[in-house]
Length: 183
Image (cartoon, rainbow, N blue to C red; front, side, top):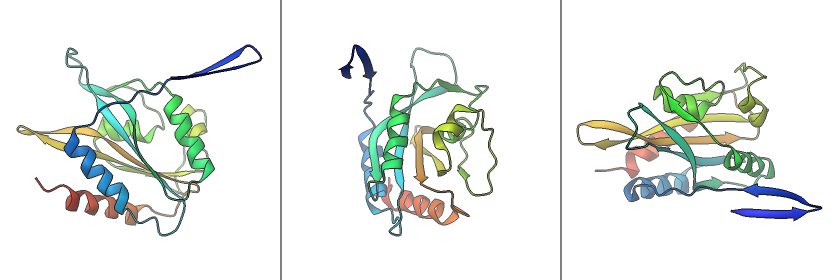
């Protein structure tokens, strides 16, 4: 936790650090380390799915983890990450309204999504204001637990400007996950 005092004004930033399952963290570190940004600015970050074992609700809270990779140390992308760290994201359940928050939507639906040049968003949505003109790709990450797949979290790839398509990036991350995770 960090506190700053400037002219009797306090800013408090609380960062929640969550422990990932070591195997998942190892896979994600390898994926982030091998991702080819093609010499363009980009930010990879991981939102972990945290469930309350005492809750009967189906869903989780997404918590931004320490796993990140900013290919060019782009200040706009660093600012976006900082805003993500400062936010308190709600429980994501089956019927939770997540608006334009793509990471929340990916956790809720289990389906990858992207924000390209052709994507139209509700500008009144708070997440749209945070993302601005940036492009995004989100991919839910699952792991095997007994007989079912369980959501580990969501990989978010953010670019300073929206691309025409994120298909190549999606396929690259998907292939890196397959190669990195061999049970």
